[in-house]
Image (tube, rainbow, N blue to C red):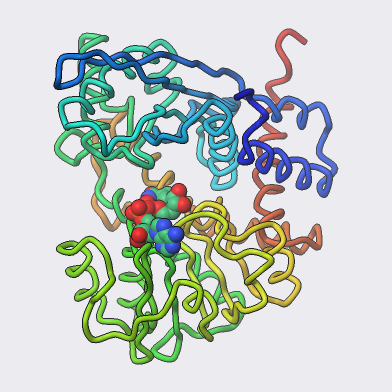
Length: 419
Ligand code: NAD
């Protein structure tokens, strides 16, 4: 597949172009941002447990590194390809710029179903992939992190391999590591915590008091949805519905969250959890709640169902859960939409903290991490609201405009080499 072919790349390009035209961005800067700076495609051969050798395709794409080293996850999934990886790298450029991190955008991945590999095979895959891309990554050049199909253990293997290649321990080469090898406190729940912060900022902006009368529905009870639910619940808000791929549950008096977490821990899916009314995922999206948090997958609120949505605030915990049409339609109806590159940026912000702590070998306590995270997201939220008003546009385009404004300034100051 060529670079521009995937729907995700076309979509990312369209978002880039629309925001650029709205803010009258210098076309020379727009032209440069349409292409990744560097893309590496590698083969990753490993010996399977049965003694045979199997080769997988791997990728690492660095979209733009004007503001700092590349930052972005490593995905193990059968659908990974060069074009999708490049699109995700581009979105990382905008996410990092939006929240003001001194980092650029990158992404990597391997076309593989990790569920079909043993732990030993996954370790071999990760170590060989790291070896194949080690010449373009590093704590000052490009810093990977976990994504779909990878986790803290993957990062520990990756960091160990990179360190073996260089001859000394280099924790700053990846983030999302286990705490015991230089991970950061608060990283696991950072994305969900950021979502909860953003919901509070939006409620304040709308003059909505968050309390026991505030109702929230969460689509996707996973690594993002669970901590978001827990933080909002802790401040007294009522989580009336949650869902996963197996279906949704509803309780108008508020879901027993601890019970739901324990149930999912032991049974994997919410389905059959006693004591709550079973509804469908579609019904959850249409509930008459104050806040809807789509935190599962992309494309769940579309032109077909956006008219059913009754929430006053929608917090895009997932990447791209609302289609372009749904965003325009709901924004015009007065719904407050917190766009994904802002709403779920908590993860990359705390990844940045982990990188900083690793470089300094000085580790912060949780209070400091959460306080700094709050400050960064609040500043970005205010900037997006300001751009929304200035350009009379929706929050999604406004978020891109803020990100592009920062990138433009940096790119203009650095200039084009050779000029
Ligand atoms: P996860 O796998 O931990 O959780 C996903 C949840 O969504 C699970 O409960 C799953 O059952 C549910 N789900 C999957 N398909 C569904 C469907 N068709 N209908 C309803 N529910 C469905 O994943 P996660 O890490 O929580 O990521 C969720 C989203 O947030 C993804 O879009 C991801 O790219 C994005 N995101 C995650 C992070 C992070 O730090 N984890 C950061 C930024 C963005």
